[in-house]
Image (cartoon, rainbow, N blue to C red; front, side, top):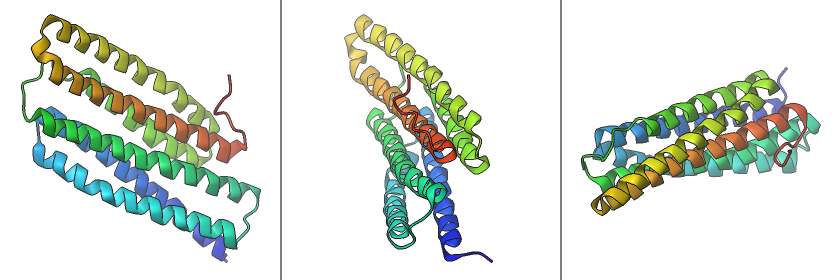
Length: 217
């Protein structure tokens, strides 16, 4: 027979996966809007960010309620504490995808100084990381969680590559400066998304093993 606590834990698990789906959709849509100069899609992404904001508040409230009323045992306590942190990271991922959408609107269909290759690749890696980190949580697969953390290095490398290329375009032609700075901001947003997914991987390890690896050498 399912206890009240078990049902409440299942409810917050379903809600955090809903948050993750929203975050993934925001990343995918923001890059699609950028590639296609789709202003309407960009505006929709910005509008939908409030959905994630509301989910974050609901999930935080439910987690706090369990902590106050149920006094969960060690394993469940770690899960709830991890969810509280993951919830914040997912909401910030949504904010960063919104920033990409805002940049699409600002660019307003300009012909780009270079084709978009590395930026979409950064997004692809981030999405694969996000999918796998939640699989690691579901399967309690600590090896997968740790491996995901290492993938962020590739996102960082691509961000640096984008920066160097766009900086050279600005140096060659100052008229490209505004657009190049905007695309640098897009790449930086994706790099920060990778950082937040890395945080989620660290929370997954904490939930599964009870080990805090945030500042491990």
